[in-house]
Length: 345
Length: 254
Ligand SMILES: Nc1ncnc2c1ncn2[C@@H]1O[C@H](COP(=O)(O)OP(=O)(O)OP(=O)(O)O)[C@@H](O)[C@H]1O
Ligand SMILES: [Mg+2]
Image (cartoon, rainbow over all chains, first blue to last red; front, top):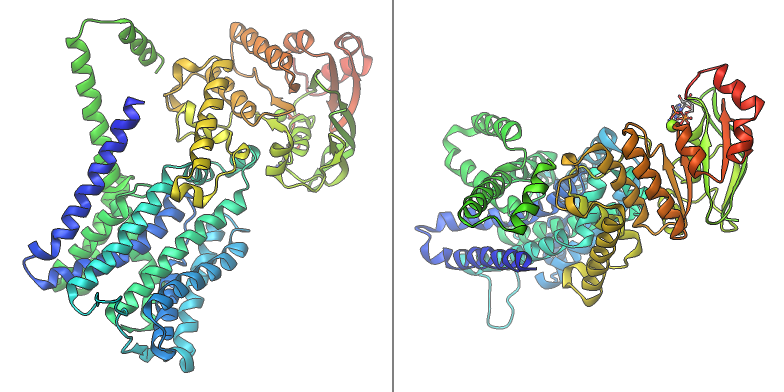
């Protein structure tokens, strides 16, 4: 009980700290360029949170995510550009359409497993990319959509300044993190993890594997669609590239660097990787050499990513501190009990 | 009658792993299935737990046809099982294994999780309570916080049984619960199985340890090459000519 309270306090402090820094960032950022980079990083991070749910928690490597990101961006972009709908209608529409498409895709793709699932979702990603690129009349083909309106202002709050756009994106990022952490710590999150660990055992215990997979896939697509819509409203010019499977692999890279199946991982990984990308601009295409090496090191030595490694370090230190504390106190009944437990190892 | 199979058959390619088996399990008994290696015992379990679809024949449970029911529904309707090779959620602790085992009995969904509704809290509390209760029952309270990779073989066997028990089965299928554990531990497991039956759960077990089967089972079915060759009380089975022949003849095993 006490432990639980300690844990939730630590969680609150972590969230509060992040929010405080994030809110202060526009004021302390030395230049506006950083602000644009971080805003874009936040948008990508929302999509990476979606990927984290599928890959990290559910354990299914979906390569269709950039397709969903592009879909969200185009739905929102088209609705606000061609139908002049408010951003506050086109964004939820983008999320809903992306979710529906994902559910349809999931219904078929989850009939396959393992490598087949990976290849199937990659194909879906390619198909979405092709449709966007070839459906010239609707999407503008390779020319893309130009001059997408900014997010519509809400009463006195407009989204013209960079700062206001940053805060808009921060709002959605916080929402995403909140929802994801609620899911991860609940029975629903445990259910996803059980499917990752053993589908057969989960089914044997009465868990409807298909339904849970669809649920995770749908939620992931929902947030990926929101990320796409935010991207369209922020960059205001989108081309078929944003649905290219290349982007999926980039999301995956962000996730692996940060740490899959962790709550901080997607944000940490995305910010570090986008930051690195920007600072390695001078290397152009050769950037990937750095990323490749980084990825190998992480996969080999920190399978839980940076956040996973940090958490491991933390429990190690805590254990050591506990031991130190115990040797100070006279051995009590509880101590004997703990010793017995350890002996079981 | 709890479970009834009629002409239950399973082919793997050209191999008939289970051949037209008729069998019945009565409420609150302990029945055992024995037979040489490869006789089709595990296959029989895999069919009546919905793990594989049958090729032909029928399964009915509590009077309802289950032949076309999806796997996860079997647990919901009251058939719990363990696997021959102990199957646990290896990436979590003993307690967390049991908590997720109770998931099919809880109702909370995505929205409950996001808004941490009273239903979510109730379900999480109930899962924890049930897990703790089963932990006590199977005698693993001491190791509840351990990752399952750290516990002994015998503890893992108990946990696998506990995992099936949290689903609150009417019928519990145990596939070689005492394989690979020593004599003393086997006796402890036999006690646990007896205790499970006394709480009102029907048990069907596959076991090669003859002594254990003879002591526990009210009734025994013997399979050989996929077919039922005998059925009866332990006494009847130990005197049955065909059974003795099957064990001494083909792939001998004790
Ligand atoms: N999934 C499968 N695919 C192909 N053949 C299988 C499969 N499962 C079982 N078999 C075959 O079916 C036959 C029966 O196997 P089963 O596992 O039911 O035997 P068993 O009685 O449980 O044996 P044991 O005592 O060794 O556990 C064996 O010949 C086995 O090789
Ligand atoms: Mg077997």
